[in-house]
Amino acid sequence: QVQLVESGGGLVQAGGSLRLSCAASRRTFSRYAMGWFRQAPGKEREFVAAISWSGGSTYYADSVKGRFTISRDNAKNTVYLQMNLLKPEDTAVYYCAADRTPLRVAVTTKGADFGSWGQGTQVTVSS
Image (cartoon, helix red, strand yellow):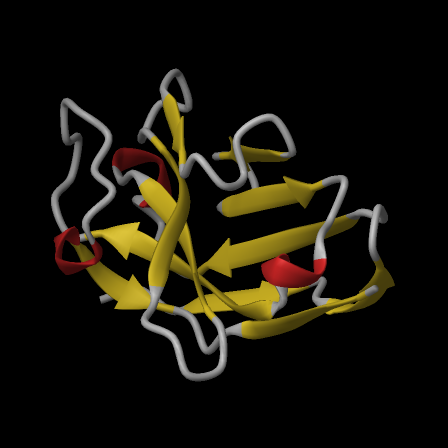
């Protein structure tokens, strides 16, 4: 288990930007893929973006492709989600998560493959 702490959420107007950060406590952070998920009120949790343990591979949900960018700094044990051109439908609680399998070859988008989750940070986009 690893402790994950998200930050950077807030209220922004449509078309604006936010950068989410997720700090991990585990010293072996660099061995695990990381992901971002979100959950809007009354809806199921959905995948947003994921990045491989090396940072060399990324994967995005179609709804955010071209607007969001996931990145990581293994020296700082931190993963980021840069969100541009935000839309009201992006409003949700955003969670970062750590893969339960070290050095996974392919990036996973399945929530069940992530073993540790942060407490979430609220993102609200006004129209």
